[in-house]
Length: 146
Image (cartoon, rainbow, N blue to C red):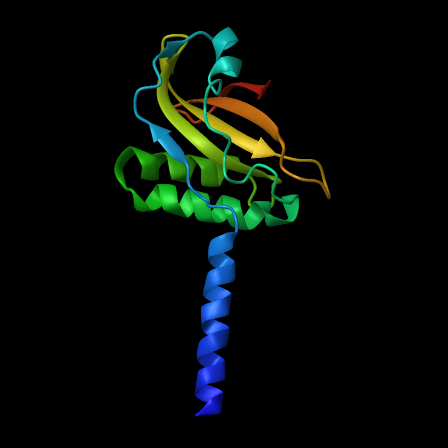
């Protein structure tokens, strides 16, 4: 009986500790508007600080995988975008996507992606924004964001 109680206590503790880490969820905006290439860097202004901000880059791969899996589980356009993120970014990169939008960039359908990243052995405290051509998956522009 003691063994069962001990195992149950350990399982509860593991579940609690897992829930204490940063959340891995991408905010999806189906109407990111129309932007020029020069405006893409400003696409993240005014957004909430992502949950992964400040986390160790050692956690990036796990958080990235969970955020993309969450996006894929929503189906439709979000699943299409998850496929693009899976093919465009290496799984071991030190960044976590936290924002995505369907938008028009320079007159063409595009995906806007915001990610938080950090230097090797550091914390994720820097921001980058990407614009991908929605039809081809080609990078339109990438820029540091504040």
